[in-house]
Length: 384
Picture: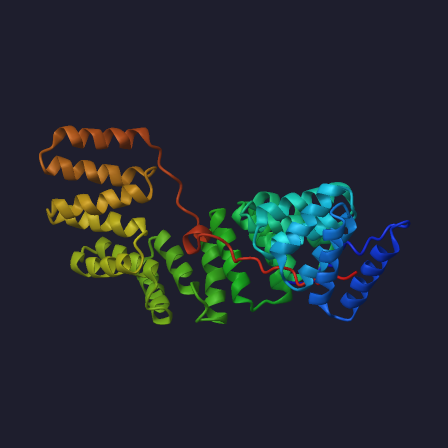
């Protein structure tokens, strides 16, 4: 991630302090400047032990601890500084960064919000707040703060990628596609960006155009993880099963343990009325990953067709447990109970179907991943 300059709290030594205290602080500053961070931390610790009301010393201790990558201890020092003096300059920003680097994104966002409230013109605080919202999976909020930051830094490709991902996961597709187009202008052969653009196009129902983007990605990087699965899913969604089957097999050639590709191959075999081949794919898929709802739904349907009712009940109950809001598993459960002669239970299942509304097709971005790429903490060292 590109370095963003960070405001920091330096060593704040007020006039009128006792000579010994001033000498201790001066010694701590000198040690820090010499790169003797453990010694500097001990000096600041001695100072705050002697005077627990010295907010500046706590802030400076936090700076040294952050340089040592002791972020948890640094955050504690910053909080003590703020408890004594909430308006101490730069400390909220430093606290946010210490929390951010620990992956504590909600806590970081609180600190960055306060830093931004103290200085509305701070690009650093605004950018880091947006990144914290992204890390906390609050993508709509992330995009709101990252968009102005990205406009002020047009050459920061990584920042624009995070903004594009935020827009994509917030279903703000116009924003996402605008960002992806800019990224593709700079790197037309980027398989990753073609994939993301395809996901955005799928989100607005432009499946044909999405397929073209995934084809471009597969041509540019045929071994890119998930590229063939994504293309196969789009073909499957368009009922182009032969093309889908080819792509899922290509994904398995790259990753033999790709459970979703196995699931969709099983589904295609089921649609072609080849239940034994379908079951082989589906059982392998659930052995690899036991939370793919569609695999259990299809296994239940095949077991029902083959009159293996206990197996059908087991598979379909698992499908219901994975997503109780989907009506199709209840419908198939109703059919199983009906075939078993249990009319009362069958009617109960059919009643659940009537209560539920069909969900829209899951968009490709969520089909390919449960979340966007994780953030890497900004490489922003703190200085006096």
